[in-house]
Image (cartoon, rainbow, N blue to C red):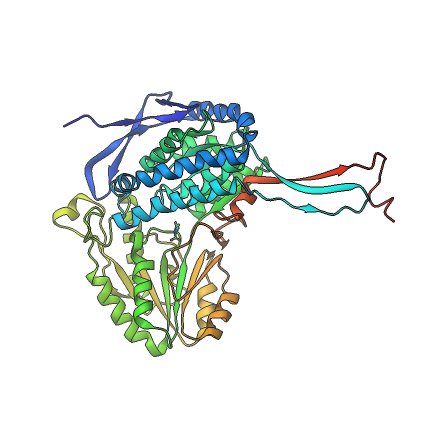
Length: 497
Ligand code: UN1
């Protein structure tokens, strides 16, 4: 057997080992004896080196005309496109979701990179009037400086691209710390940016744990902004770490997203949407449809169809094209899911299918779990309130639209929600009432597109949005510019009375 490949950090344009020289393993969750590679177990010294490289590169990068920055991004997007299949396969091997989905993940990175490349020729500000004669007013976007980016394993190329590309097009430089469960996809993304001709120091990659790398990065005095996607629990600590120095931070955290199915819905469509929304990425999405609220008239029919479809899902290695659901990311996640099965049973929810880890054959080599449906759930049950991040869907009966909306909103989170109905009045009412950052009609809770803002309310986020031009608002600050060409002192509010 060939020795495992050792992957380096990327600091100041060089592929380098961590200061400690230590590494950690990245294994395939569908087959834990398959080692994807060894990655650098970095620490504060590596973070310092990366931040200092990013700081050094900042002045020249921010003064590079944005259309030129965009050209590099455009080249990177084209390279991502060329390597899409290889990157998707590598992603399935390192984090388990099925190939169709990892292709989608790489595609999302391609779309985001092309999109932000185009923003290099826009980055619009405003020109406006002045209260005074012979005076000109405008707003321009200024970059912030070095950005510290901390990303999760479930969208290991898409989410880093959501952060890196808008940061770069605005003129910032970045240090990326990817999740230890899926660093290869970030590696592939950063290598692509390097190949596309990004100047040294503009993007830096440091792998390692949250404690060893994430915390010193977030707390670093030269890091001017932080963007984090992950759990609400860690997001809170990120927010607290940034508060002391008033460092802007963009937080994308948990979800407990609802699909609401009304009596007049197209039931086949609603079942399709629930299967995809609930079990896609093995339920490990912040946008996963982990609750379904179903009106009484169609409740039994919906549940029957959902359960028979969930039972028929083929679970296995995501590289196999007939597999529909991959493994969970690691043993800890599987134990968390298992513990919620017990919680649900003890709360009195009806376990309709799944509810256990899968064993025998290839299942013994990975972290597989059966697609699970709980029926007759009470909206206050923990399985209907807490983010499980696994293939578990809780179905809740309801009487009418008003009750569905009330249940839908009665959780701590506010990322995504969806309504299945054929009645346009009900659809618009729900759109207005749902306290989520994303709302779907006759489509599941997942499937965000890169040119629309992405993010949530309540404990899902802190008011910022990613993607679209909304991302530019996080990665730049407004500078208001007044040009007085009157050749005399003009005093606003005084001379204008
Ligand atoms: C996530 O759920 O963690 O909306 C991100 C979607 C994706 C992004 C999801 N484009 O389905």
